[in-house]
Image 1 (cartoon, one colour):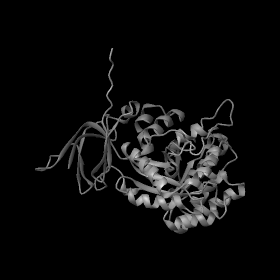
Image 2 (cartoon, helix red, strand yellow):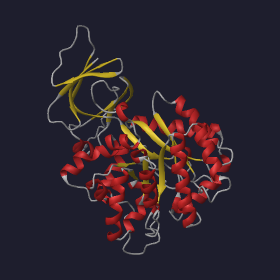
Image 3 (cartoon, helix red, strand yellow):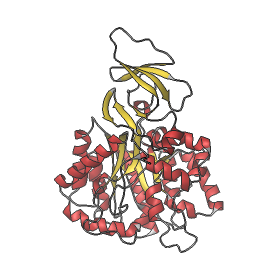
Image 4 (cartoon, one colour):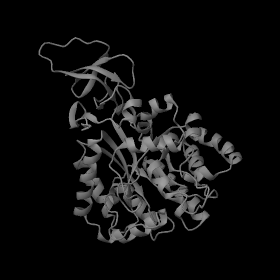
Length: 411
């Protein structure tokens, strides 16, 4: 199958590429078609690697208002609402909601998802169900599962054993939530436990780290130090890190040295954290997002996630990664032309590093032929005009398609 006339990742020159046996066989400016070869003219449209959702909670999706709404808009009331909703969880309930959301994501060009699954539940029903869905949905979405202790590891009864059980069941990564533990001592111990567990079982790590406006919340330094000492490096991700926006600059300057040495990844969630953070502020109100610009300029890998889709923490969401990028550029003040042009990397190549995808990802010869086609010539235009994903190909097979919206002025 030969695809012609594509602007690959903002290239200024049109390229062709051939797909054979589900992989990119050849990429060049001009490729002659074989006799009887299927040829698809992309019409000078933008081709990108598939979008990646590097931080979401699929087990909680589509539950906003059930059984109650988060009226304060705070992280902690969201946790209370979810604690009430957990009593209603069944396999059928989880599967029905997750299937719907995965189809929403696929329609928006997403092909890889890292989902955090709550394991502070003695039945581990959400973990068991998500493992089943990971297999069921693999042809449309590659799903990574993080064992996520929503109510804490040390602060929840039998929390350590539940984490071990979740890893043995088949979780891909180990999580933690140090800022929600009862004490600073519990916070540090939970991180020591989580990273050692990941090292023992050769798992990735993704910590909900310092998702609070308290500058005294400094789990990040422990995460980075343990990643360095255990040799886990870029297998470790610190998600949220919103307390970092409240750290004093002298401390951040010292911290940056450790962060660079540790090689850990970061995930920012612009939509949810600008909604949840700063709730205790009067004025001025903090933006509620980590130091994306400073981390990026320091050569540290940062990706963006949606975090929540219509659940107790966020009452909106469509599964589109464009929304996270669009808001993220504004609140992080990354609005230079080059910043905007390259911002697709927050939800593609940077996110691939976060998920540790390696040579399973990217528009390169001999790699899986997974890509999306957008109704634009470059990402600046695609982002600015909210360009439709015209088609999404996974391993050479089209799995989703869309049509440009039609608008008319009638007067």
